[in-house]
Image 1 (spheres, helix red, strand yellow):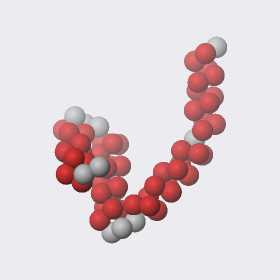
Image 2: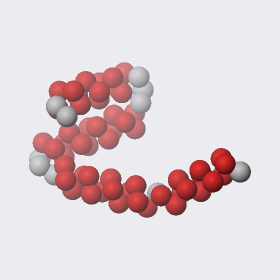
Image 3: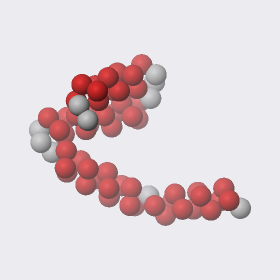
Image 4: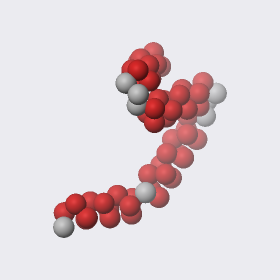
Length: 64
């Protein structure tokens, strides 16, 4: 995705008060600027994998 589009999403997130998304976009843009976006993606994958059990528990709780 074009960095200008990401900047636009970032500004929209800030304007709408979606601070968590704004933080993630800031970090991504910073990582990309210093050519560390791959490392950032690895950290995101690790976070997602570690949260899978919680997601599954939440899904099961809603279905019961």
